[in-house]
Structures are given as structure tokens and as C-alpha cells.
Amino acid sequence: MAESTMFVVAQTIGSILCCKCGIPMVPNGVNMCLTCLRSEIDITEGLRMRMTILHCPDCSSYLKPPSTWIKAHLESKELLKFCIDMQKKLHDKAKVRVVGAVFVWTEPHSKRIKVKLIVQKEVLNATILEQSYVVEYVVQPHLCGNCSRVQANPDQWVAVVQLRQHVSHRRTFFYLEQLILKHAAAVLAIKIKQVDQGIDFFFAKRSYALKFVEFVGKVAPLKVRHDKQLVSHDSKSNKYNYKYTFSVEICPISREDLIFLPPKLAASLGNIGPLVICIKVIDGISLLDPFTLRHCFLNGEQYWRAPFQSLLTSRQLVEYIILDVEPFSYERSVGSSKYKLVDAQVARRSDFGKNNKIFHVRTHLGHILSAGDSALGYDLYGANSSGLELDQYRDLVLPDAILIKKSYGESSQRQLKDSYGCTSSLTEMDVNESKPSEYEEFLRDLEENPESRFNISLEESLEELFTNLDLSQKEDEEDSMKE
Image (cartoon, rainbow, N blue to C red; front, side):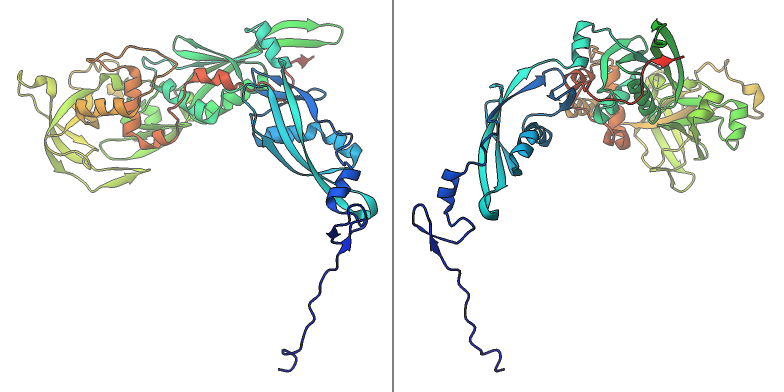
């Protein structure tokens, strides 16, 4: 108790007079105030206040001597680090240390970049002096090596990826386009060209093309065939230059397609089907039996070992009216979706007023269908079944119709058009009121499939890739082969 009441003398720091101006100050090693010390010693002496930097306007990169191009945007962390590194040799020579840096605002089109640097240096008698100064960088346009070669010859490419899908629609390419934009998979392409049933991507290096093919293989089942053509060679140094071609074929199966499985394949998948519906396509194909709710997954290797075509595609969907629904089984979960088997009485909308034809079908859409609803399905009653191997399946009876999805009418289509007000750069097609375009069908699929809508970005087009082409990255793999 006595110790807590003891008187403690407060320590005070004494002050002295500056040897130059005589004002009171805290003692330091040189007995001089900060103002007089700065007037006597300038730690920024020998540092450059103005520098010229080279900027490539095509790829937005800056030259770091001797030959490294660094991509950086205005007032970015990368550009600030680049500006500090340009002064690093001078800082080391002057024995100063950078403790802070910040951009000073300039007009975007002034071709000037100003950076305020705060540096410290140990001066007389271990006294540390801190001082700030502004460096002005004059931006001089200069094309980098890759951009200059591209401008000299736009068709100068080393590898081309020929992406093809032999189907009558382009919905797969619309979806793939958005995935490429979101993940910047084709940012290294020097040219993108649309051709019949596909797209060609041209790259300046073979390694860029291999990386792009690897990306596409993660989102769709592929069959890749590659070839090379000799362009030139140097017999003295034994160097050969080739042009590489990657022929990439995408699986022709799309979501909501009706598939008739071959007997051997159906047996290897546990005797599923043989009539199945494709419910998802990623790096493999997810199939669903609409009559038993059995499902299976077919990877790309399994598909290309025994390829098959779709029996009917989404362009052949027919609208049906649900007249009556009777439950058949409980609701089940297949992956992230839910299904329920029901027996339904349906009639084609086109038959109304012409005949009283009613079909009794079993469907997996019992969890969303009720009497009076409309649904889209495949009309097997009027379809040609001569190409099917029906004789290899005993006691197989084709249903009159297979319902695929619920139809929400024209009002939903108009609402969908307002929700996604964007166009595609792959196909510029006129939208007719009577027949919606392929791109509207793609948008409708996104509305009905939230998983696909989550993975894409509908704000850009492939044409905008050319404004952000990054041709300055270096790869260890050489495109020339030695023999």
C-alpha cells in the first residue's frame, strides 16, 4: 500500500538551442533543427527528377531495361512498383531508402506520370533525415517486339486451334464464348476468326495453343488431333521452324438432346435406357433415363471410344398441353436437380381443333407439371424410327412422346429478352418475331439452368479481347524443334 503512494518524478526531455538559428529543439546528433539540417544537407542530390519511359500502346506494357516488358495499367500497383524500380540504381548509389510512394494526379492524355517518393538517409552522427520529392516520368510510345511483329504481318502465327462442332446449332459456342471471356482463356490469341461450324484461334506460340486446348477440354468433351508443317530450317544450326495445327472436335451432344444408346454402350452403363436425355455437358456427359430416373456419367474418353449421335435435338421440340397428372413415385434428387415420375395425359397444341388425339406418357417432370400447363417434348409418335436398332432390343416399345421441360409461354421470352440485353460477336442474326434466333434460345437455356448462368459473364464479346491482348508473357518452351 505504501509503495503505490510513493511519489514518482516525471522524466522530461531537455531542449537545446539550434546552433544555426537558435530556436529551442530536441537534442540530436548534430544539434541542428530540422529546417536548418535540410538547408545544409539535401539527401535527394544526385537523384533524377525527370525520366523517360517507353510504353507499348497495343498491349499496355512498359519497358524495364534492358528488354523486359511489364504490363501495367495507370495508377496500378504494378505501375507504381515499376516507377520505383526505375530509380532503384540511383537510390542505391545515393544510399537512400524509399519508405513511401504515391501517385500525383495528372491528365490521362498528358503522357506524364508523376510519383511522390519519400526517402530516408543517415546523415551526420547517425541522424536519419527524411525527405520527399516528385519524379516526373515522360511516357514515350514504342511498340514492343511482339506487337511490332504482329503489326508488320497480322497473319504471322505459329499455332492455330480449329474448334469445331458438327451440329445444326451454335448454342455450345455461345456458352463457350462466355466461359472464354470470364476466364480470359484466349487473351493470348493474336487473331480470332469465325468459320463454318466453328472458330479458329491463332497464337504466336505453340505453348499458348496447348494451354487453350487444355482449358476447352475442361468444359467440353473433346477429340484433339494435331499436326505440323515445316516453314523453314537452317541446316547450319540445325533449327527447324514449324506451324502447328490443333484440330479440336467438340462432342455433338448438347443439353436436352434425346439419345438412343447403342446396345453395347447401354449394357456397359448398367443397361440404362436405351432412350435417355442429356441433362448436363461439362468435361463429360450426364444422361438420365426419364422412365426410371436412373442416371450415369459418360466421360470424354468413353464417348469417343464409342461415339453416337443425338436422335432428336432441341430444335425438334413440340409443345404439348398437360390434361391430367397422376403420381407414380416419390420425388428424387439426381445431382443438384429434383425429379418425380408421374403418368400424364397430354395432347399436341397443334392438334387442338383438328382431332382429339391424346397421348398417355410417363415423365420425370412431375415435380413442376400440373393439369393445364404447357411442356416441350419430342414427338416419337410421328417421328421416323427406321434408323434405330430396334431389333437388337427385345420387347422395346417406343413411347408416343417424351417431355423435356416445362414451357412458360411467350411472355417469358419477352421478359428474357429484356433481362439480357446483349448481343454476341460470333453470329449477328436478325431476330424475327415468329422464330427466335439461336442466341435467344441460348439465353432461354441460361434462364432455365442457373448452374450455367453462374459460370459465365454476359457483359463482353470476343471482339473485346483484342483490346487486352497480352503478348508480353514469356514461355520456357520453344516453338522451334531441333533434330
